[in-house]
Length: 203
Length: 203
DNA sequence: CACCATAGACTGAACCGCCATTCAGCGCCC
DNA sequence: GGGCGCTGAATGGCGGTTCAGTCTATGGTG
Image 1 (tube, protein in one colour):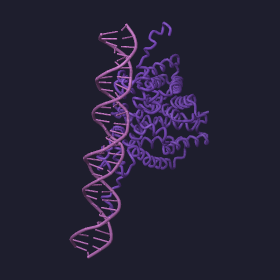
Image 2 (cartoon, each protein chain N blue to C red):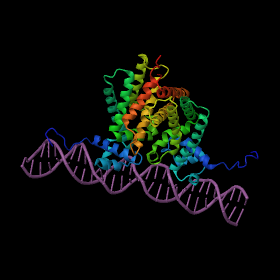
Image 3 (spheres, protein in one colour):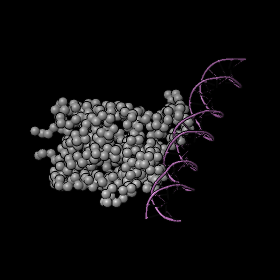
Image 4 (cartoon, protein in one colour):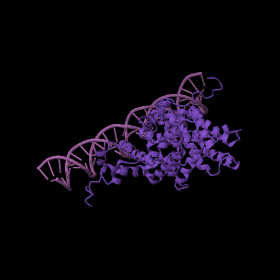
């Protein structure tokens, strides 16, 4: 209640509801989650949610849109100063798995729940995801130009393969009740395979 | 109408409905698909479906269960006679993508729609999927024992990475309106990366 | 300073459209 | 004629969404 806290009671409801929705969707799943569950979790009335979001779908999409911006910004920052393309692959993997680790519930929503809606996957083009993954395709292309990466592999195919590998490992991590492996190990494994798999054979 | 066709009018309704469901679920998505849509597609009454399946969820699970059996059997057959572990990786990838190609609608249901239900992913343990993928872990382990595959990589981690890579590429293939790449190329890319990524470095 | 007017934020009970599921009955075949 | 497979209209409940009403903050007025 300091003077600096100029608006103590005026917590941003938009943010409040969004964070509550992430927790609820992660726990119950988007489909099974009721608007009233989100409202309870956020400590607001059902109707209040409709003052900040168009409908239940919009709530899910807003989570995606707003969080992907943060993820992308963080990725860019993580890559600053790493110049070797093959080293960038490792950095990408580490960053990705660290995010999954640090934001488990968000990861769960993005991974499992966003795919539920094939309306989302089929009609809505996840521009933000493209920006994120596009970084990897850039890395591969740069590596090819620098002569370190084999040129018989299409950067976009490599991108999807890499993302798919990370995604599936994250999924297993999220689904596993008993943590059978660390995400650090996962990052090392996937970057280990791809770094060697993509680099030019020693002559 | 030969004598061999002993039960011409007695088409197996179970099979008929299952195949109709695959087409409908692939096209509209599981959630948006109505039981009456499936009934129409199969040319039966709504109620008939409940004579063969417990409910809508059971219909989805039955698709998974029955089709995975076929997939697994096909995979085993495809691997017959291929002894080199690294060659088995290529065979696995080729088989997988060929199935996606030849059974597009089934692939769509298995890939996109099955994941909708986190009940499915979280509570129901997809034993059949494990059997299918477990083959890959076996291949890796055999390769390690034979000294061809690097031993610093856990076979199960490699398994998830491999599956994830194939899965994501299939997903892109399915989602892409214009076919930007062939699945044969996808098989070569993913096996190319993994074969080199997994094999022991030349001394 | 006490009081009121007004706007804007918030509430939550009730509504309503939507299907999954049911079941009473129908017709075909032995 | 009766049993079996099938039909499809009717049912029920579920939960997203709405909106009339309440509450709170603010600032204008005597």
